[in-house]
Length: 273
Image (cartoon, rainbow, N blue to C red):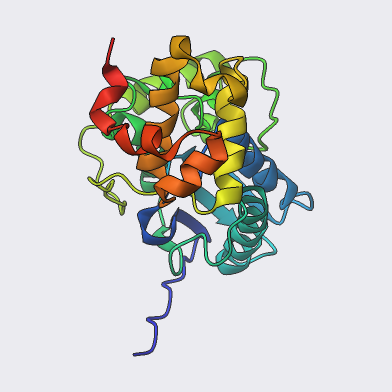
């Protein structure tokens, strides 16, 4: 069955959503999120499009973008290919990272544009991750409320704020009030999967996960067998069982543990005092 043609926006402005293949996570740590934001900026060095808002969720991304010299399809192709290459190389995986084509809806009025930006910034609130947009680090909301105006993420906030007021302080106040009034917004979105998805795809990516896990806790893999590290060991083994399809033998070999120890570690044991 042929794919349906994408509806094009006369204003050249779109609300875009792109999702991980099979609903899997596309951001496994903060470095991944930082890299995506860097790519978003890097792919626009020639100012071939404008970003009005973004929000990075675990398994999908919201963008409000205006076409310039590049079409929306070209913009998203360049961004997604670059990030998928980074992600696959880092975690030792192959294949598609993103699910099918990205979704998009056209934005043909100023009111709808402001509502789309508000919806994008409130996505973490809708998902009950945070209580307010300012509490979520990985959206462009901070670009708007940052009075220093560093503009590191290359977000075109000035045009949006001027839609509220010519006075910068007043515009910011009105923008914040507008963002907080979000209960009736309805846009295209992805439902979060109720079931936990796998995020470790190979032994190589598992090694990277273990390395970061140990580094954050100032531990060495050789110490996992020590009695005093039992709870720590249970936590790590449980994480690997939940987030990967590695066998007991593979996990044991990776951590230098007896297979029986790994076999006896149950998910519920993670909270043992």
